[in-house]
Image 1 (cartoon, rainbow, N blue to C red):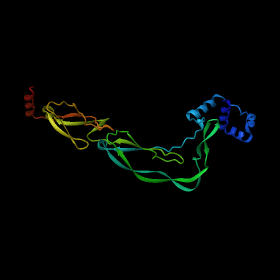
Image 2 (cartoon, rainbow, N blue to C red):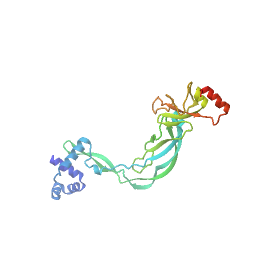
Image 3 (cartoon, one colour):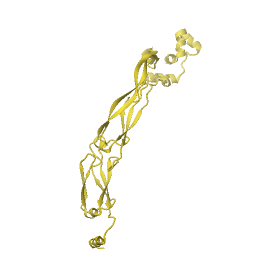
Image 4 (cartoon, one colour):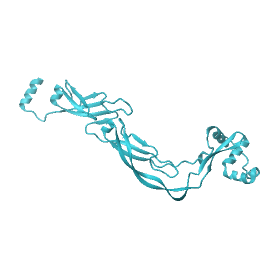
Length: 278
């Protein structure tokens, strides 16, 4: 086991490997590099052979990644209720071939080699020093963004690896953040809708029947045969927003506002007193 650890240590250390290649094992002993350093290397070996570790995590090369691009997209409440598609003009940097050569980061390739009976090491090796040159070119194109029924404010629509590119790396993501335009009639609260409905004093006292146009144009019937108090709230089940990726809907809450007359004639006052008995 000690010999295996020592061999592994030599393979990992570039200076020790160079001494071994030039002067052999004797040269290693003279340089003080012929003995294993102990537990850490044993742990590295088990990580390498049984868990796929590299034994040198701090030296792992990370693939560069371009920046994510965040774009706020404003949708109407009607589109969030029924669904729609928006065509967005997108401009971004695109990598194109250019003349000449350049220093590259694509010079490591994974290899395996035997370091003992039944023992293999995985390592990376430089395979190229230069690559064809590239350059950034600004290009524009149309992107179709689908607004699905029930999406909420703040929902992210992600186009993976369609963000900013980076040479010899992975492009970032393009993310559209859904924002909701304010609506004249309805106010959204999660999957529910809220609205106010003004009725006259007479309607509040004797009852009424009304039809309200919904976001997709269908009519919602609302009314009562009794007395409606100011600020009274009526709940209509299933007339709210569609729940995202579901077939169900939230509820509609209607708050009644009672419009009182600005003035009454003496005759009207007398009639009201007679009717109400006071």
